[in-house]
Each structure stands twice: as structure tokens, then as C-alpha cells.
Image (tube, rainbow, N blue to C red):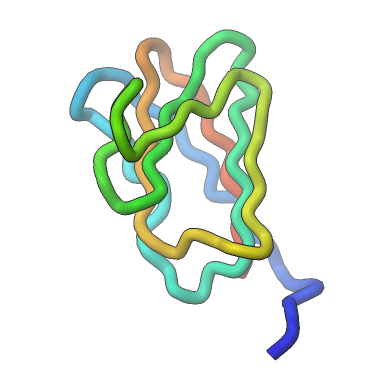
Length: 100
């Protein structure tokens, strides 16, 4: 099977909560996910993301920081497990675009 070159995308953006242990469930596990874009449009707050089904925590093993006004795209290797996110303050929006 070749690489998918077109299809419908879904906007699954969420408001991310702050606080230790209060990670926001971002996406449920989905074995059919073939594209993922995570973007942080906030101008000041980083968003900490866990792609491995665990609880996202600031500065913790298994989580990474998505800096303000940056994005990460997965097209060749796409995480299909559950994804969580958290921030250290405020309520930034995490822009999420998935396919299918």
C-alpha cells in the first residue's frame, strides 16, 4: 500500500488545562490515524505533550514541550496511541489536525 496523498482532515483542537497531574486528553488511540499536526498558537505558553498514552507533565520523562508559536507534523511515522497535553499556566489552545 502506498502513502496516502489525499483525504479529509479533521480539526480536533482543544483547550489545554494547567496543573500537575491534570493532563488534558487530546486524542484517543486510533490505529487508522495517518497524519497528525500539533500546533501551539499561543504567544507565551509552552504546551507539554505525551504521545505514548501517559500523563503529560512539564519537564517530565515521556513528555516534550511544544514551544509557543511552533508546530510538529507527523506524516511518515504517525503516533497512533492516546495523546495527552498540559501547560504550566493559563488555558492555551492546542491546534490538532488529523487524518482520517
